[in-house]
Length: 254
View (tube, rainbow, N blue to C red):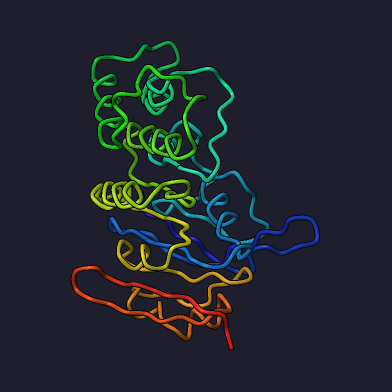
């Protein structure tokens, strides 16, 4: 499922959070949205997955308006992994991941062996197969994040939207999760905060600042000292090699 965002504006109370944002996600690309806190990244994603209403502009999915999709039809194509995963039901890990199969089942249809196999495979991909019978509520923040990603994988979407997907994860699982996502071969739109990880995994990035797109392009063209100073108000030193990718050290502006 391709995404086209056209001149998107979002106003909350008296504040205009997005001020005319346009972007594209197509042809199985991993697109990152980066920017400082308060730049509008989460608001942009929420508008794309219909949790926030735009005041102007359009979100097109496969050249059809977002609002033309019925919720279940949209859920068969789009999966979302958010920052905060507060699920207040006493469900097991396995039951949480099985929720990803709901869009593919009829109103009274029970899951089949195929669905159970997909759930088991999704848990294995995030390294959580041994947690299947555990209560979701007992898990740590990082463990919950991996389970929510497993639920999205079980959904088998053609578009994956991620809001800080490596939140709460140590570096081992950050790399594991991003490798899994990268290997899906589907369209991915992700809000990220780690510039080095974005450079390693994204095909292209949009820099969002104060509700507008500051710059767009391949990571190697966009992530540089001048951009970091301008957008994040810190100085940095960027080093690169063919094995480790990009490393960034940050310093206060002088």
